[in-house]
Image (tube, helix red, strand yellow):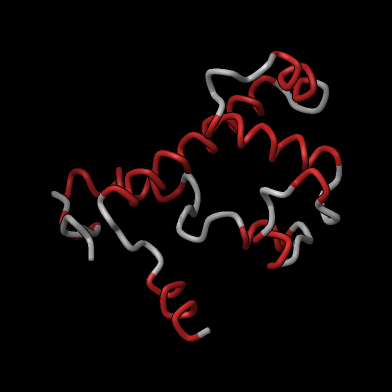
Length: 132
């Protein structure tokens, strides 16, 4: 059970409701990465073992680099070697690297926020998992 009450758009003062829409327009974080990976051809089983990226049969070398970078942003942000940036720059613009970094960091922040406050943001997933 959540440690705080969950608010929705109608709980906000009318002048702040456009901010709600602006934040929602940034992207759907509710379902994590699996649906977006499916669009790219990664199976549900492949998405579930994404952290095993070194030998992942569904990922190409660029995909593996992006996963390695996401892990670095999340876990090794203070120990990330320059080499990973050199490899990223061979494929992405600086703006794309900033976007990749921001989205990864934002997802991590959302996960920490929801975990510490025990906010269940995916009730459908809980129902699905309970049925399995």
